[in-house]
Amino acid sequence: MRNFPSSPAEKKLVDIAKARTALNRLFYLFDSKPPINENEGEETPSMADVSSTDTVIEFRDVHFHYPSRPNVPILRGLSFKVRKGENVCLVGRSGCGKSTIISLLERFYATTTGEILINGRPLSRLNTKKYRDKLALVGQETTLYQGTIRDNLLLGVHRAESLPDDEIAEACQQACIHDFITSLPDGYLTDCGPRGTALSGGQRQRIAIARALLRKPELLLLDEATSALDADNEALVRQALEKAGEGRTTVAAAHQMQTMEAADRIVVIEHGKVAEEGTFASLLARKGPFLRFLRDVLQK
Image 1: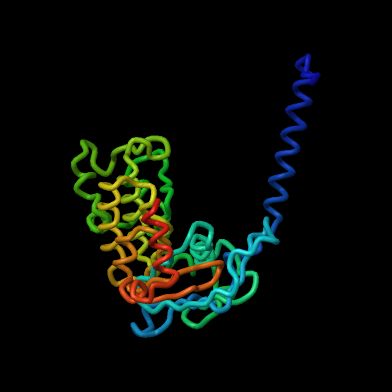
Image 2: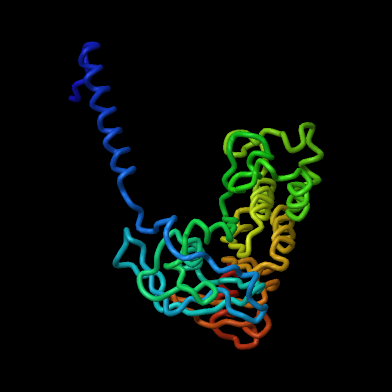
């Protein structure tokens, strides 16, 4: 049987031992250096400085496996390009690497081999912090915190204190959530509740889109942003995403038919590689991997 402290003195010794272990862990974290350093590297080139026909993102023979699973390759020689202002949709069966591509673009991980180029410069050489300032991510699971809707909208915005209310309202209008917020008794000062539980899934997702727009991103990343919603909320969120993507370079991992149809180009991923790419209509006409993927989606 486990022996528990039987006296105040023994309990105090146990608490001291726990505190010492926690403090040692903190010192270790303070002294450790992350493999991807946020504050080193070259200035990130602006996507606004290139023409609409130029490539702003290029995956060049990228191989990748997660550090915790070195024997399980995810990407196996992935290569594709994204032009400025283009809306590219990544599709493929579960586990093909769509979300991994989004994570690599966010610089959460480094490629195992191969390169990701941003405006012709290797992503690995760029200042990660400044590079991320040019991005915005809307994922499947929206993270809101205890506090007001306004507080949650301003998370991640550097100029939050000086941001005018009309700019916040404009972003919310683009995200199709402004009318709902202003209909509440406390408006933008309405409390979201723990983890945003006072709001529905669709409302939380549209707030996340507005939050992304307030960052004024040059690159918008969408990772299955509507897959966890019901049909009514999915339609509203999709409308918001279409407005959000206007004039921006967008890379979306998705399997919804409407998202694929709205994309400028679809990149089909199979076994960690590009199986084919093209418009929705051209891929259907080829009757290849994309059509097989659609049949699998429709059968579910």
